Image (tube, rainbow, N blue to C red):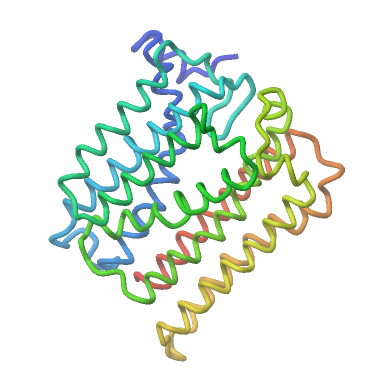
Length: 305
């Protein structure tokens, strides 16, 4: 059954709505929050709306979320041709004609806009466009190569996305900033297999040997648990380097709260894995995305407040 917002969209845009749906606008807030985190870490939350770098920050976030992320997802959908639910898009419509070109054009429009921003942002954007093409398009299609799909996503979304928000300001990264962004790499390494566990049937039908499919559900969950622990060790190193005083113990509490959110998702999932349905695994993925959002907020409060 088609939801009423989608029905309204079809009345307004007709079949053109399918192009927009495949950019998965429901995911934009998550990507925007993770990109904005880098901006907040660079300028500090109290200065977020009065910084002279606000304009470049907003442009950088918009290009990254709408053009790069939206274009990447549309480009990917053109080759995946999913029939079942995918992350942030239930009952996906059949890929419309020219969807791959639409996605690629959206990414390239963003790349042109990135020339208005500092060199670090432009470089990160260009790297991610290249990775997006290699990830989805034949004959490369690295998403079907176990481990390659994992590496691309942990660096692309985990570290380069908040780096883009920071780089858009033109401010230097520094040691603490580098440690924080590096810690997000293993954290996305934890999240990525969780987004694939409920899609085993679709991936098998397409012949895509994703990391999660190669490992199996239980091993994927164990890898996610280990990667999450590594990530929070990284956050802990960044916190130690920041030299927080005893009066700032609440900052440590923020990190502990985020770590707890991940444990509450992963530990029960590991123990219940063999008894869970595909729908249960899908719900687990959304719970993990919530833990990711909690981590973004915790890191913002701990370092940018």
